[in-house]
Length: 640
Image (cartoon, rainbow, N blue to C red; front, side, top):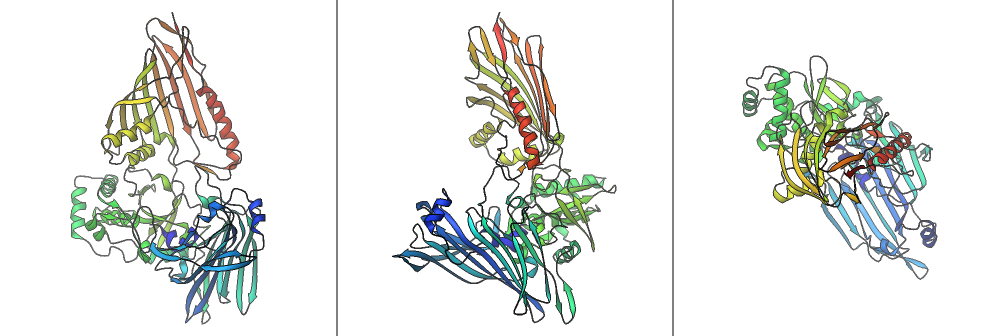
């Protein structure tokens, strides 16, 4: 369920603009070297009024940019999106081309409607109108504008004051009747760069937010998402007055739950004999509620294929469990629907529908009590002792008792009749996601041979099996090789076996044999060898100029037990000292030991924080730099 795509898909390209080209394009070209385009204006203007006692909302969107380079000429296409809930009323698009000191307006050559390409979306009514501009040259301008209507006034969403290009001005304006109260929240504007005014014009309130001279958005690896960084506004209708009666809309968590409840109050009101029969058989012989709900959860994971839909209110309303059972596929809401209904048939209490936002959404319910806070739905199971399990069947590899990685740390709104609970999903500790590697090595002249027994647990297990999927043969071999590669690019995976793929309650086990060529360094009678065949976070130093936070999918704990058999006629003449470090972000322990004819390295590293803030970067880098100095250390084996 992608709620935000319905109510805010306009941000995807936020097609907005600013009239007039007040700066010569040559000046802009010199001021912004390396950029192919400059946004002159990007704006949205909303008109919110009460017509025949009902709210009416339209938005006018404008975008204007100037081409700054030859490469920019090739960017001759733009697009915007609309759907049944936000239909398109009108649009216009054209190029403005310099012509002997004057300007010439050239209409677009084509405007094509197509289904919006969204990954994992089986069916969607969201349409993309693709515009192709003609006559572009350096100094030419692209202009397009369009008007939307909002069928559901609850689905106003956000405005982004940022883009991948530098911009002269972003502007959001809301014109509302005086009997309408508007609420809003501003995010990621620590310097108060967004100016705000509220004025009166022709009997209406005019709310205006403007940001001038905006730096372009910069994509950075391991970012939690653009909403954590870019300045933006969430806006919504708090209430409106009709015939002296104030009608509440949004602005509190209670009102949001009331809105959501409209989509679920008539769900699964009649039993389905087929689903009930399957459920009863499934839980036959199971005595405890935990065993029953676990069996139900695994059954849904294994038998209901995740397929997302987006068509009007289908993006919000869970489908009947009967239909999901018959189809054997559904989206996140549908999976939550069938889990809760099967729990009723199995007489397991405390299983409820629950709304939640994935981790790419940074808000809490109290910060943003609007549909903008959510993009997902799960089922929750509350035990008699008050502990709660978060059942996200869209992740088909996660074991019962663990949340999916993309909802960790997020608040969930749990439905309970007329009431609800806000419960924060726990972050899974690194210990739960333990990866244990037992590696045995042998020297064969210049070749390093070895075998590894690897156990992968928790969310690490889920991620690896998700990557492998149902790949077979050479495809699976290639995927596994890329996942387990050790030492250097001369690594060869010679054989492997897998265990516990289908049993979610056991660690995924992988045993493999390998060879690594050109890994040893020999100098006279001495052989130098680095026992760190894997170096976690070696390339994870954070640059000083990083703007965004640094995000991990999940916390990890890696344990390596590496042993090298010393060949006859040789001895270990040197091995490094033990070392360790521990802080709020991560800890590691490195221990070497020499026993009989073997040298051992025991190495453990564990992360403690899921999302690193700027104030964490120095400590993180300092710890990694110390760790990398140990990664570079070698043992020395000498001929006797």
